[in-house]
Structure formats: structure tokens, C-alpha cells
Image 1: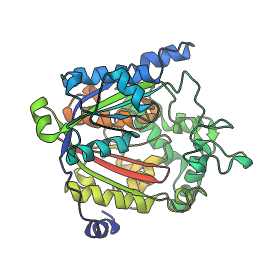
Image 2: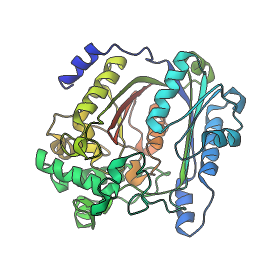
Image 3: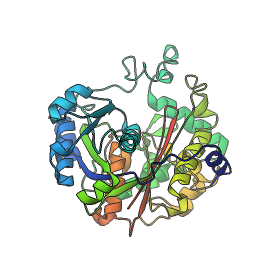
Length: 398
């Protein structure tokens, strides 16, 4: 681990939530089928329909009734009250959050005694309704000012922002375009073995290099998918989880650290690539779990753009700062590589569920349910994200 991590752990006492809660049920919608229907001009359902469908599948997976649910966290794309109405849940504790905060809030609520079994439910009809992630009608500007701060000069898309990050990172670290391509190639290798993945055709480095730029230096294969779908996760108090299922997946550690100073001007993205926040979040989660990068059988990285991956490899201690390119080339993150990463195909190739599907992949790998792409004897899985200044680390274990 980087030197900043033990120091952070020393100054910040551990939370008490090690193995306080566990995942007992997961569910999602038919990403592949709905992708085809949306591309054919259909609108299979709306965000609520996807969310409810995923919730029903999670209940079935957990083998419990709806009446056992006493907590609800709604994804940010749906209204909390309406989602509670449609799922038929009257919770004694509830909230609304994105993927990483939903997991953290569920654990904290369980530890505080506010609820024992919490449903985390997300649905998004972004493809069929034509959600814009760039341009004059780009979503999210009110919450994330960096997406609109530069709009008078024509810079509004998230792709443009991450293109700046990658360009700066290339110059700072000596990182190359071919090394960036290793991420897309590896994730297509994993998705080719995943029946739930939308993009299953393998690609080569040559395919990557020959693909068009969308916003240079980002190629087409560096961008995430935009598709409809839903995800649901059911998290229970640890002792109750053991009674509910013979395959609980525990939340071993959580860590968070934000960089907000200078965020609107993009400073944290292009000066230090979120590195201090990643290291601090890593330190907290590693100290809490008693685990480190060498213990992780599976790594899942939020990847709306491929550049998230080398930043995470350095920031969370999987390689030395400046060595991500070498790690990707020589160690590997795809099938047969040293560090299996985004083993479902991730946002680039499986489905863009804004971090929610990565949690499902962590659970499936630890349950041993991933078939051809299963990582042998996986015991620990690590999820990381660094979005809009918020760096988060979640460690799962069985």
C-alpha cells in the first residue's frame, strides 16, 4: 500500500461495520433483450418497470417474501415514494442514493438498528428516452457543475472531460494509447463469456487502434454503453443473513474520501487524477477489512470510460504510481491475467448500470456462479469508483 494509507488509518479510527451486513439476493433485467428491442424502436417499459422487474428477481434469488423487507434505497433515477408504492414496501427506514452510497447507507442503517433487510433498487430507461450525456441538454449539470461550467466554450460532454483527463495522464505518466487499449480488449475477453453481456465479440489491440476517435484521445471502445435496465440488491444484517441463505456475501470494508476543492475547474481530474482521495479511501477499507490488494481475487472498477481503470490500479495500490501501463501490458487484467478486472465486461461491454451491475458481479464471483468466466476459488472482491470527486472503496468477502 502507498505510504499515505497507514497514516490515514492511524488518524481515522475504524468504523464498526466489518461484516455487519451481507448480500442475500441479487437481480437484474434482460439487458441483452431490451437492448435489441430499444434499437428496434420499442420502449419495453420505463425506469420504474425496470426497477420493479429487477426487485422481483432479487426476491426470488434471496428466496424471501416482500414482507421481510423493512428498508428501501431507491436509485437516483426514480422517485423514492413512487418506487416504494410499486414494490409494495412500507419501510421503517429509507433513502435515495447511487450504487456505492446505497451499499454504504444500507450497512450503516443496519448497524444503527434502523432496519434489518434492505432492498437497493435501481432502474433506468436512458436508452429508450434518449438521455443526453452531452450537448446543450446534457443531464446532471445542476449537480455536477464541471459538466456545464465550460459549456460557453462548447465543452459539455462527459467524454470530453475524460478525454482531458486521459490526455493529461498520458503526459504525466508516459502512458500510451496502446496501453489504454488493453482495458477494452480485456473487458471484451470477459464479456465474450458472459451471456448477460450486450457486447460479446472479442476485439484485438489492432481493432482498438483502428477504431474511430470520439473525442481524442478516447476511441469508440473507450466509451461505456448506453442501455436500459434495472438492478436490485438485498442486504441483510449479518446474523440474519446467515439464517436466510447458505451463501451470504459480506461487506468487509468501506472507504470514502472526496476531492471537492477546484472540482468545477477540473483540477482534481487533471492535476493528480484523484490519487490522494483514492489512497485515503483504500486505506480506510483495507484497515477495516484487514485485507489489501494482494488479497483481492476480483477487482471491479467503475468504468464509464476506460481511463478509470489505470487510475484505479495506481490509486488503490495494485501497482506503483506510474506503472499502470506496464501492469496492463505485462501482468494483465483479462482472462488469464494476474488481476481479473471487470470480469463481466463492465460498463464498456456488459451493461451501463452506473455501478450497480458491478456489485452483482462481485456477488456472483464470490458465490462461484459465473460459469466460463469464473475466477477460481474467489474469496474477496473489491469495487472502486472515482466519479465527480467522490472516491469509494467497497470490499466484499465470503
